[in-house]
Length: 213
Ligand code: B12
Image (cartoon, rainbow, N blue to C red; front, top):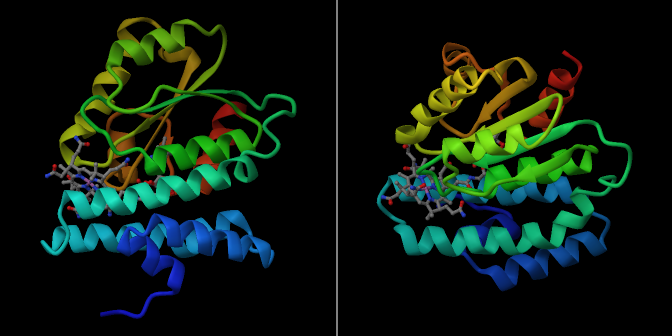
């Protein structure tokens, strides 16, 4: 088995207490919160995915790792979202599409967007098309809509939301960004979205570009 750093291994083991303990120790040593996530914790979750695919891990183990990750995200959120009180960079509605309950990556994107000064309306998981539309309608002017999907069967929902925006006459004032592990650039283009980004930091860069475009 590969030799992972202690924090990565603690995520893989789903040891929430250990993850929190190590994150606190590293923060005490001056570690950068975002680097703890991208360099240690996310690689742990990706390995969990691999173990799931290989049949080594089943839902309970994956949930344990997801819970450990969530605990650490809650601790890091105020640090990642620092700057949220400055002048608004724009308004983002975000959610995991209907049928998809994965939210770790979506939450991370939401946190970094807040940290970059965006106002974020996070609709949660398995969000119905109507709910996305209602959130857009409730806001005047430009809206950035972030759609997250982690499993192939829910990818089609992204197209459904974009079509519904068109039908409701809202597409002109909404910039749609899509993301999640199975989303490719080709797919994002094919469904007529305004772009995709492979991680939360890139999602912030994309949102800034979309806000200006
Ligand atoms: C944790 C997890 C779960 C947890 C979710 C807990 C939670 N609260 O999220 C639980 C156990 C519930 C779960 C359930 C299932 N899962 Co699951 N899960 C995972 C796992 C291991 C990790 C996902 C994760 O958190 N990654 C870490 C985060 C940080 O990365 P991320 O989500 O990709 O997000 C980043 C980018 O994608 C991007 N991003 C994300 N969203 C957005 C949005 C926008 C707008 C932008 C710009 C960017 C962006 O930025 C993020 C931050 O850097 C993945 C493995 C993997 N390789 O992804 C499988 C995986 C996604 N799951 C899978 C499957 C099959 C399932 C189930 C169907 C299993 C089952 N038989 O029931 C169910 C489906 C449930 C449902 N209906 O949604 C498959 C999907 C295969 C496929 N392509 O269809 C994967 C790939 C595992 C595998 N290798 O087989 N899962």
